[in-house]
Length: 249
Image (spheres, rainbow, N blue to C red):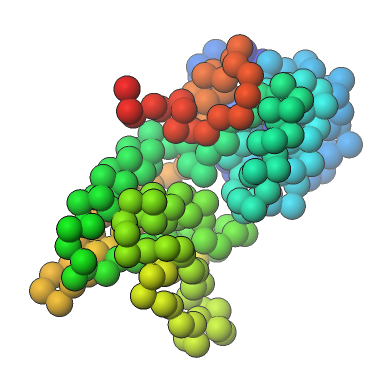
């Protein structure tokens, strides 16, 4: 399989290594210094593009792949509000896109168990719940896309919560934030050299239940992205990483 890498930072380089280990070929690498090479002609050398860039460039990269007719796997987060529009554009143009807030196998198992746990907690309203996420200081979006997916899994399965609100610790407004009882708090922390830690906390007067996923490095995210690129071959439409794992089989 021939792969175009859109975003050639730390993640892009790890994806490259894993792809090569799996006997794939990298035919295009787009980083901040060669954006002019992002052309339809160059993209069409690839069977699939893997996109891990920034929130400010991701939409342009998706559009370029749609125009070139190249399937794209998108791991960049921070563009959550545009997903419905991109899905419509993808389906209208008969393009192929697979989006995930996190491609790690372990995290996607975590997502699934999180939903089950939220359903169980409906019978125990004396517990309140919040989500905590910790990432490296270079992460541009807050909350993380993974934390949003976790929050949506809770909100869709726990009657007590109708929406989420984010507080970035260290922000001047964090101490003044008010969280309504039907809002799920996502508390975000930015600490050097943390690949990603996500914790769901159910707390009551008598005890606390914590459900946590800790990433030791970025390799799990990168492997999942390459698996997604393999999975999307020959498929048309807008897919999520849940379609790839399909734990409901």
